[in-house]
Image (tube, rainbow, N blue to C red):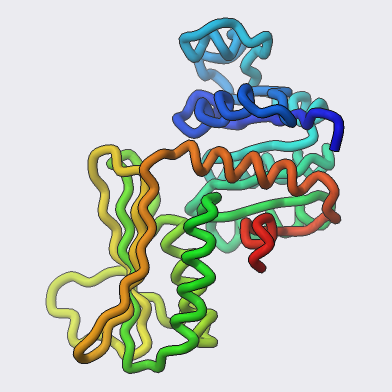
Length: 270
């Protein structure tokens, strides 16, 4: 792929948005084709570099996704469910690869994204890191190897500004564990324990969310039975790894057929 791929970053004023801008600037195969924020945001119309507190980049922040997407080959989107669903339709119209790192998507949101993926490439993952996606594969294999005498608990920790729980990554791990056992996660998920709950249900997959400080992301899968435990854990200490994974996905999707993919596809682990 000789030509540079133009990327639009949505939610560009956020921590991940700004991290993506910096990573794109340092990339030799990508360039920033557009920067989006919600209507009414005080960055609209300003040069992005200056809005970020640095030198001018020659890219003005816009609130017009259709116009921005028309000039790009990829859209990277770590925003909110409602915005992501709207962006999916517009990115499909533009035939741009839509890389989605947004979490907290409801079943009806996912259905709309699948509809958009009939016309363009969508890469959606609860976590863009290589390590987490390897952990997902290992979790599925371990769950498949162990019987129901082994309880499964997933513990995740994030910064105090994260708005959804369990995290998208925790749900990825839960889906992997459920797949290993040949069951649907919705049928066995246990996300809330308070008061007199009674004994743990056999076969349940438990979730626990910790929120505090500036924790980037920690995920632990615990397999526990009488007399022994297996613990699988991933710790992210630098959120730039998520940005780099998203950029990898944007490049990977350029020559793919329309459809919905994930980071296991991007990394060749599916």
